[in-house]
Image (cartoon, rainbow, N blue to C red):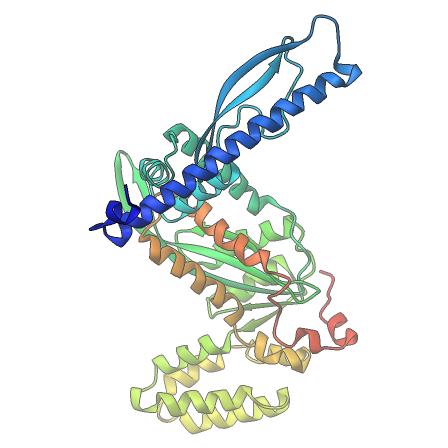
Length: 399
């Protein structure tokens, strides 16, 4: 039959499935033949080794073994010996799924699919006979590895950004389930080499100072002993929480957050002017000039917005960034470094609509953290490499 007549009238999707199916079938056939041949030679070499030629041991036929791959299942003929000494090196004993299938299960789980949906997706696409038990085993293994993320020893980081973001999580209470937004508190550090690294993440009902106390204590117990500067948003009580756990560390209030806070007490028509005036304050060349500009800012707007000025005067950590090398100022007077990671996390959770459980949330967030940390060598704090060794050493502090 002519191939053109066979596909006549089919959609592109149908034609694509036929082509993929034929290609996968061809790859499976060749891989199966290759592996069978390699294992046959492997057992010949096994008995050619005098140390394996023990009395009473000899070849004892084959047993059938199915190995699921992304191209489809391979039915292999695995050689064996009489006393069970021979072990093939081409796959792990009792493992019936290749690593790329396991990686695919993890990716689909992170996307929010159920065990049944994952089984159907992989079996339909690749013609495998994956079971829910295989999926559950893989997920449990990934969950264990994910939980270890927050137990690992972390590097020393002279600068640490702290922030919280909210993600939807489904929890079950007494037979019923409810979706609620919960706070995920994230700590992102800048190593002594300038690399950005996610140090840990923590679930909490809300982003409170006492919750951050627990976070800071945990980070310290895992190796974060020497922090010179913490950068955070305007959470009340945060400076005190930092001081309790890191008495010698300094604190910088995110000035981008503070600008938004200021503008809440300002008429919409004045917000652009007020935010521009405030940016001019922290764009000063040194602390003395910044404090002088701040006094001018307060004098200009106090009569119009007394509540805004009153709140601003209570802030004590506006210009801490000026105690550090000037090349870093624009990177450390804002928490944008960690906001970028949180935005990535939010995009991931938005695609998934909701987290089916805390276990699912842990795997999803660790996947995001691992991807971020994998590129740590490429993601450096802006202008860090332009500093002199003396400036870099000035960041180090023993707590």
